[in-house]
Amino acid sequence: MQKMSNNRQIMTVGGGCFWCTEAVFQEVKGVQKVVSGYAGGNAPGKPTYREICSGLTGHAEVVQVTFDANIISFEELLTIFMTTHDPTTLNRQGADIGTQYRSVIFYHSENQHKTATEVLRQMQSYYTNKIITEISAIPIFYEAEAAHQNYYRENTQQGYCSFVIEPKLAKLRKLYADQLK
Image (cartoon, rainbow, N blue to C red):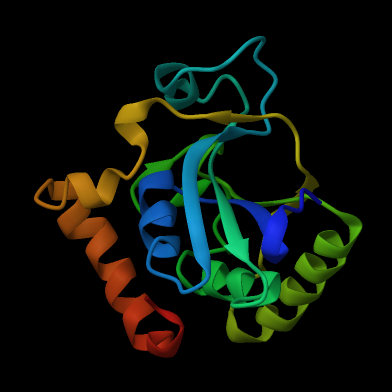
């Protein structure tokens, strides 16, 4: 696990469009930084958004979250992650369809691997369908282009933000009000 000063740790997850996942984690206490990017593919070199959207590179849209584990734990962040997207749909979140939108947890240590496995096991009872979230070791993480960083905060009037991200944030605020900034 990449540890930094003051018990800062890194989590990398994908739950569909990274704009949604980024917006969710930007609201959580203890989260210091959220970077949208790509991971888990096999294209040579740094992939572009256009290449990722083709579905041919094998990369998932992910966010890399830097957090202070003294304020919020990896387990708590995973619980938020698992309840703010649908971890039971294969390669799909709403209208976003393709392998780039898969549900995935990329662990940074064996401890994160064990925690992720246990959180998914515990969460299964809340879902009718089987959780299909992939759990894999962190591959190379590529930061997405600047236009995809801080997307929701800079584009709140855009249709996708209003119709897709806002409902996710409303659910977050309802379920986790005490854990938000």
